[in-house]
Length: 381
Picture 1: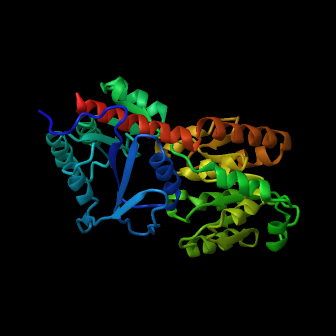
Picture 2: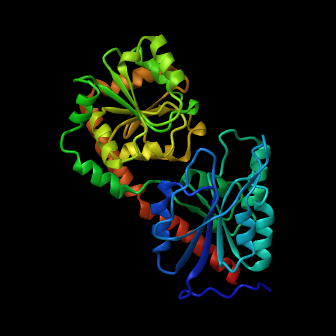
Picture 3: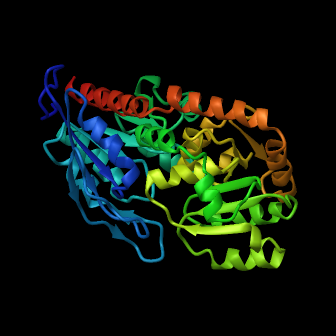
């Protein structure tokens, strides 16, 4: 017999949500979840190298340690094990098969009558049968799983997951600050154009941390075939190798390395100054960011190697995709947008509509709340 109390409709569901880090972009999600009636939320978070944690805001937060094995992707998240033996009604854990604590935590939670939710991609960009078996062995032990997109959820159901235990919380950003920042730009981006001496040139924009995974080298190659265009790169990271590559290709004078900009009001001016947002590979929430400002997006067509947010891009409606790894095709797709102002405007309007209707913060929180309530009911029977 389970030793957890029955959770009624009037009882607040004591929920512990375990995270590998407390990133700034997650704060609005957890705050909105904590504000839902009947959800009593605690967020336990550890730390990820290269990502700074922020302070909890609007919810209770608790920092915990993480044990990582040197030179291996494996780790042990103590928070998962501790939460599984706590007085919580439901725990939400990251669906990461490399966490050695996850399987024993699922077993411990079941023994203690704690409902379990696994939250993650539900697939690997480097999928193998072994990786899938490991992931499914964990997913099918949980009371509910939450995915970032409907297509992946449908695949899991087709693979034998109980449809009643599969939920979708489309990953997104809080749209309110972006809408306010966009509305406050009253110069159409002319201040940024003047500051960086862009003149009337077509402007391409990249906003994210500079990383080899993003394949900015391909964008620099594409720029050689777009002699009128200029590129703004907004983000931290090691840009020195790419600066050297830009000079070698002869496009260094048309690339502005802005560096990191975190203020949304300032970022809004960069989005307003740009014509097209280009993220050559491994795009994620940057897609939602760009679409929220109404910028057409160009990225790789290799959906299986993209992050789940790629589902927001509708080919020919909110952006275009190019043949993965083909700088020439990337240039062709960018040029087709730069040459057609009417098409860019249609895509701009469609992007904003799609984000507002399908990738709102409330929709994401709805998915998380539904999974939590399902897990609470599952252990109370």
